[in-house]
Structure formats: C-alpha cells, structure tokens
Length: 233
Image (cartoon, rainbow, N blue to C red; front, side, top):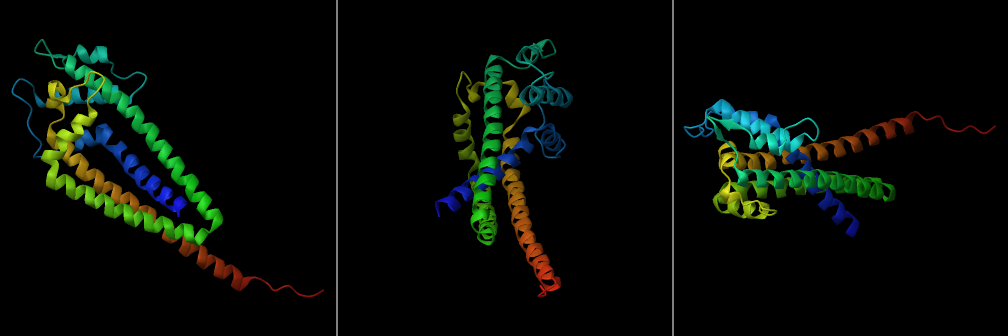
C-alpha cells in the first residue's frame, strides 16, 4: 500500500512539474502576447519594447551559457530610462534559483515515479498497470480541482503565491519592469492552462497503460494459440 501511495504522489507531482516547463518558455509568452485580450503596455513603453524585455528575461532564466545576464538586463533602456530596477533584478535572481530547483524536482519526481513503477511491475505487472491507470485518473481529478480553485479564487490566491516567491532580497510587490512584462493575466491563464495540459498528460499516461496491457494480452493469446505443442520423441 505504501509503495502505491508513494508512486501515486510522485507521478502526480512529476506530471505537473513536467507540464510546468512549457510555461517557462518563449512559446507560452508568444501565445499570451498574441492573445487579443492581453493587457496593453503602459504608455511609456511600446508593445515591441515590452516583448523584447520579456524575451531578454526568459533568456536569462533559461539559458545558462550565452543568454542574457543580470548586468545586460540592468542596462536595458527605453527612452534613456532603465526598464528593470533593483527590485526587478533581485526577483530575477530569485527566479533563476527557483527555476533550477524546479528542474531538479522534475527530474527527481520523474525518476522516483519510474523506479517505483518498475518495482511494482516486477512484483505484479497487471496490478502495477491498474495502479498507473487509477493514479492518472485521480491526478486528472486533482488537476481539475486545482483549476476550479484558480478560476474561483485567483484574486486571493495570487498574493499568497507571490508571498511564497519572496526571499533573498526579492519583494514581488516592489517590482516595476517585471510587472509590466508579466501582468496578472499571464499568471491566471498559465495556472488554468497548467491544470488543463497536466490533465492531458495524465490522460495520455492512462491511455498508454491501458493500450500496453491490451496489446500484451492480445499478442500473448495469439502466441499461446499458435505455439506448437511438444511432441514426445
């Protein structure tokens, strides 16, 4: 029982963290910025300038070698005024640290889920396959509940999430440039889509587990049917 619970928790967390990686890429940024209802930038900044600043930050966040640096971000200016201030830079440094932690957690949860799944499969393959399907279905329910919570209570949830992000000199309420680059709508959409895409991932896992068992049973029966009986010498 403990093994199955540990597997269920690790798989649910791994799918969520793996899906989260998409929302830290330029692809999600472009999708949001192209959305017709996305908030316009403040008057002193053009849409192209805001998009350039956002891409520069993501380059710093995701690229270890050859990407933007805190120094280059601090020198980013529009109309001779710095776009990112000291509060922004402190939160960028914090975001870089959190990003590294997310990558490590994703890898760890994935490896743990695979290892526990293999241990269960060695003991009882069919039972392990059913556990995978049930876990994926339960994860879909959990992700749906998370989506409902976000849609109903985002206004109260957002400050709590930001307070968890604070630390190491980062004060989210004091940022200037980051608030223009990433308005609250981008986080709301991201959390809702995170739950949606995680449900898709869980449904895919359940489908693959079911299909694997179906194929194994079918070919196992065919193999047994066409096997030649042993003849006495």
